[in-house]
Length: 402
Image 1: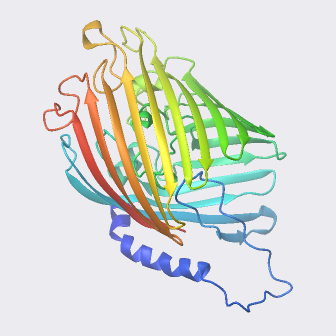
Image 2 (image 1 turned 45 degrees about the horizontal axis):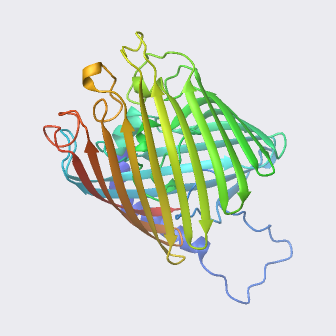
Image 3 (image 1 turned 60 degrees about the vertical axis):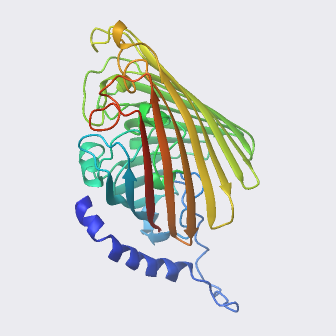
């Protein structure tokens, strides 16, 4: 089924899943007593896909016992969005409605050999870039199975992943439902999202480390080395360092593989603090693209950026998330520097405010965002002529996490 047909079927699917959700999540009578041979309680929400605040996954996922093959858990997400924006670029629209997620997730969590499969339609809205519909996103980026990997888990401290999996880089995740804001930010536009390859993970006390050998920006050329190191001081304070970079020069280009970013090096420093109803996640990011005749870059270029992600849980059902960020690129058009933003030497800042409501498995939220560009190259910014230096968006997303 195409993303367009999924969107047309969205109301019926939501109604169907709603009935199932309330049947699963409904309260039992106060005097209900489980039989002595009842199955053990259902597990808590799946750890994958990773979800930051404030949305929460289904704490009672469906499960199927396949005997010697183990127990498989089935979860999913069905969401739609609508937006209106100013200064749209040619080919984009001032307003639109679309499917943002129509995905089923099947995974195992026990045994030495485990697997994870995430399949379906999705769109990946990001600030300061034209919106790409779900059907076009699937065709242009990661296909109908954006994530699928085997996981070898010989013990509690070590695991090995092989297949298509999320990047280690950045503080925001790939799909809309994983993040506090509907749209990803300006810094996310410099990062890869899904890669193919192998990744090793190790935990020991407060230390968690991962290292991955992948194809970077989905290039199908395996020359990217990435690593992350996180230290948990206590449950409320975590500090992480993430690095990734191409160890070679890769000239392969597709809609999922931008030439310059795929040949870059990226460093993140990410801190997360939680206290009461508040969550703070400031991070900084540095990227660099080398001078290379093979890439056609006459000079090296770099970006640096900083962002602050904040969430306040007003109540168990309502929260307010905010994001402020700034990014700056080096060079100028006169010295032949490559363009990493809105022209060589350009910069941008943004602000996003997202109130969210979640009741049982349903949620709804609104993104209010603003992007402002400086030191731009005319023709590379917003509006019909590419000369408008700001863009505002209102985006609404609603759906079901089942």
